[in-house]
Image (cartoon, rainbow, N blue to C red; front, side):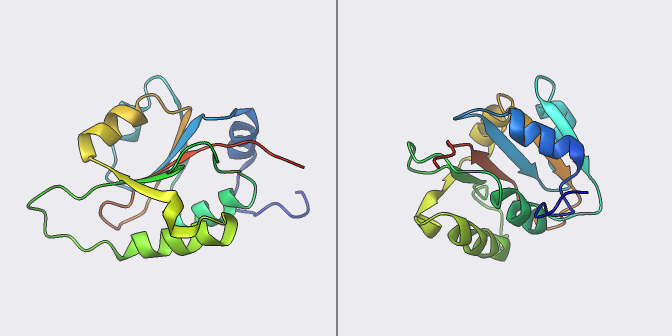
Length: 146
């Protein structure tokens, strides 16, 4: 164990976060997301039993968001005709606001099928047991400035 590292972050996930470079993307997927299909060319990490918010909060304690793009955090848009509420998006925006001075302005949306295409090029996909619908979130890594 290490001091100051959230316990939810496994050694495998910490290694992946460290390996990622500027502008690499990380997908935190809900339980319905086809992580293995989308992650054929990525690293897929299983975090069964965990939800996206708790992982997002732990990751953003260590993971700088890209300051060179308008939306380093992107959500999968709800498909037209789907009558789905997405209160989890407010939770995500609150979490992002804790770690990025842009707050909710750092969060954008990507159309569902475009999100899938972007996910196919991600460095890694974290497969969770999140039950909320449209709870997928993509992070773009920035640089550590110290």
